[in-house]
Length: 182
Image: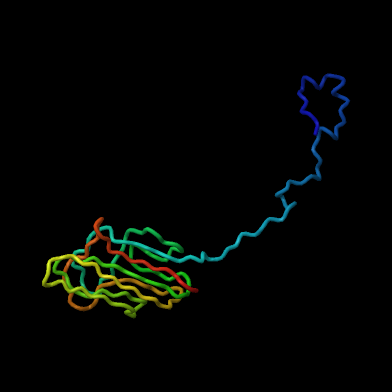
């Protein structure tokens, strides 16, 4: 490549003899990424990992029957299926999933909790602490086949329910799920 020549040096008779082809750029030269080299296409498929984990940030005082529990603090939400404002996991990819929930109940609480797929109850756990004053942790786990667009959530049962759901730094009420096979 030719050296850059300043306007003061242009008057020098030696510099005026530099061939013009060394100073000017060739018009037919191409930039490397301007179509000269083919690029590798970027894959545009859905992520293969689907998983979520969320917990309640505060206590839920005596929820009514068929009340969808909202686990508003999201820790993991791969593939964005869990919606913390509604408490509902909307299945993004067909497959076999594991869903688990844990409910910490307060003193003298009683009543069942359900995990629901669309409108079908697929798992139930029950607490019966009416006669005692202690806290307990209930847990339920299901392995089910779901389709894209199905809703999965945790709610209170239609049965009589009494007591507070507790969630704090001593024990969280939580909901989680992950795909194990597509």
